[in-house]
Length: 80
Image (cartoon, rainbow, N blue to C red):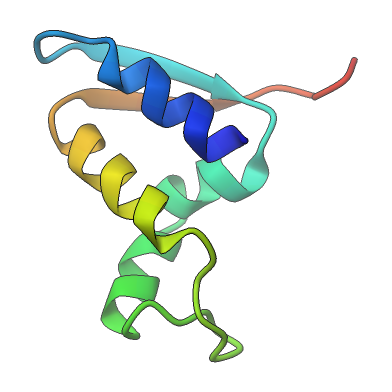
């Protein structure tokens, strides 16, 4: 759900923007901030444990959308 929420939010933007995207998902945030996406791409969309990356289709959409904007990834505690 976190990936879909980020996709939908970025899809609403009609021109390049500076965006603070706040999420309670460390998985989503760290994929961009800690280089996980670059590693997955370099490894043929496989994780460090050699498993296929889940939701590759959504990650590809997110990659495309994030190239259009300047994203500041912010984490917040979920369900607080």
